[in-house]
Each structure stands twice: as structure tokens, then as C-alpha cells.
Amino acid sequence: MSFNKSKEIIEEGDVVILYLKPSNMHSLEVKAKILNKKGEEIDNVFQTVYGALKVFSLVGQKYGSKVELSRGWAYVLQPTPELWTQILPHRTQIIYSPDISLIIYLMELRPGSIVIETGTGSGSLSHSLIRTIRPSGHLYTFDFHEQRVSLASAEFNRHGLSNYVTLKERDVCVEGFGEELKHKVDAVFLDLPHPWLAVEHAIVTLKRTGGKLCFFSPCIEQVQRTCTELSLKGFIELNTYECLQREMKVHYKSLPVLDLECLKYKVCICSVLVVIHTRRIKSEVGVIMFRAKYGTRNYVCRYVCKIYMNLMEYRDVPKIGFQLFGFVSHTFPK
Ligand SMILES: C[S@@+](CC[C@H](N)C(=O)[O-])C[C@H]1O[C@@H](n2cnc3c(N)ncnc32)[C@H](O)[C@@H]1O
Image (tube, rainbow, N blue to C red; front, side):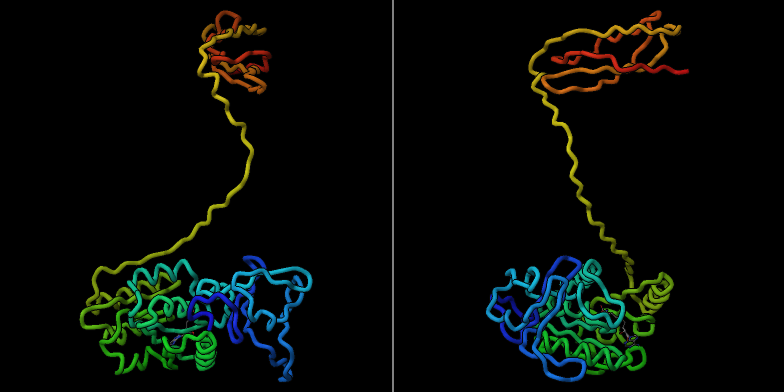
């Protein structure tokens, strides 16, 4: 029941998330015995890369606590729709959290909303929809695949969410959403290969005061066909979004910290005079590099300068408080 409400202590029957690292999480049902492949009842011991965990030993532990494994440790977390989306058993392609958050926002869902979703698939979106609309709202979710419907139904039960969701096995493109949902619904969400075939059925479920229709399609051709159908049916202001999430990669790099204390003291030390051994044309522009010292730090300075006769001079070189101590190189155009 741990999906249903926030809890402090793990109880028998809870579904918990065993967190080893971001890419290694597992959902576990906290019960003493499970059935093995032969159908025999055995102790519920879960194997991880850091050793075994007796799952029933979690009863009484705090959510968020660190638990001992036989060769290491892990955290035990309360499940959320976001964590579930990362670890659920995939029966289909699923919708991920960045798209889910945009979908919920664009459909303007909130507690009390009545929503249709089809197809249920692996139930990734369904879990987030339920959290958003409960306790007074309801999700009606449809899929025409018998096994997916029964597995999703078992999951909703196990997660304590059955009161907020009605799951039906139906081909919505052929049969629609049923008389009982006529003009009852705030929003309809379609994740189908042919969403345009469900548009007409979806329209009649929306409340007479209006509602939102949102569909999710991986191909632009599907988007075009559905948008054409929506325009024909009188929808205006159609918007198409692609949701890209870019994580910032943080790297650590040491940089010298400039000590600008010197700016307080206006002391000009010297200028640089460099003898150039090749014949150069007066006014030709080149670059000189030399070392400068400020306090205990060394800097290599690079200045663009002009030639005077066969001498190159740069008088502004010394920054206030810098001490020049070595010529490094000079370069000129060939
Ligand atoms: C991509 S999956 C949905 C994934 C789901 N949104 C999730 O996040 O887990 C598409 C589902 O639509 C179902 N489906 C396809 N056509 C359908 C139809 N005409 N009526 C009902 N379900 C349909 C498929 O069986 C499949 O489970």
C-alpha cells in the first residue's frame, strides 16, 4: 500500500524500492514467502550485486534507511511514480517522466480530475496520473491486450491504487469509451498507434463545458494524421511539443584564483625591451611573451606589439604590481 500515502515505517505487504545506485534499483514486495519457478513456497530472499537481502527483515525499518546486505548495503525507499517508471517491468514502450510532467501540465490535471487514458501499456503514465488526480478524481484506462490488462490490474491492486482507477479491456478505436463516460471527462490521453481513429470517440466523453485531448506519437506522420482529424472535427489551437531533457554534466577543474590585491597599489615597475635579430619592417605587428611575477605566482603574459627599427618595445606591459623576470618568445608574420 506504500504508493498510496506517505509512510514512515515499512509494513508487511508494502512495495518498496531497493536503491543500490541510480542505475540499479529494484521493487520488492515485503512478504515472508514467495513462489519459485516450480511453484514451491520459499523464503523471500532477494539477490543483488552486493549480496542477499531477507526481504521480510525490512518490516519495521524506516523508509529512507540504509539496510545491510550480505556484502554491502542499500537504501530502502518509498515508491513514487517517478521511481516506478524507472524500474517497472516493460510490457510495452513506456512514457518517461519528462514527457509525463508536460502531459499532466498541458492537460491541466489536478485532484478531482476525471481522465481517460489509452492504452494502459505498462502503466508508467497511469501511476503519475493517479497520483495527480486522487483522492477525489478517477482514471479510466483502456487497453485491448488481455495480458497487459490483467498484469496492470494486479499491479494497481498491489500498489493500493485500485480505488482511483478503472481498467477495461477494449479496442477503443472500434468500440469507443462507453456510454457511462459520455460528457463526464476532463481530459483524454491517447498513446496508440492510430490515435486519429479514437478522436471521434474521445470527443463525446469530454464535458460539455470543455476539456483537453492530448495524444503521444513518436512519428510526425502520426501527428499529422491526428492533427488533420482534430481540425476536421472542429478543434482549434492545436499545439505540437517535443520535450527534450538535457542534464548538465558537472566537471571539476582547478583554476588559479587571481589575487587582485595589486589593483589597490598603483605601482608601475618597468617596460620590456626586446631585441629582434632578424630584419623587420618598422610597424610590423607581432607577439611577445614573457614571464611576470606577482607575489608568489608566475604568469606567462602575451602582448601584441609593433616593431620600432629592430627593437620591439612594449611599454604598457607591466600591470600594476607585476614584476617581469623572463622573456619567453616572440612571433611575427612570415
Ligand atoms: C505504447 S503502449 C502505452 C504505454 C503507456 N502509455 C505507458 O506509459 O506505459 C500502447 C498500448 O496501447 C494498446 N493499444 C493499441 N491500440 C489499441 C486500441 N485500439 N485500443 C486499446 N488499446 C490499444 C497496446 O496494447 C499497448 O499496450
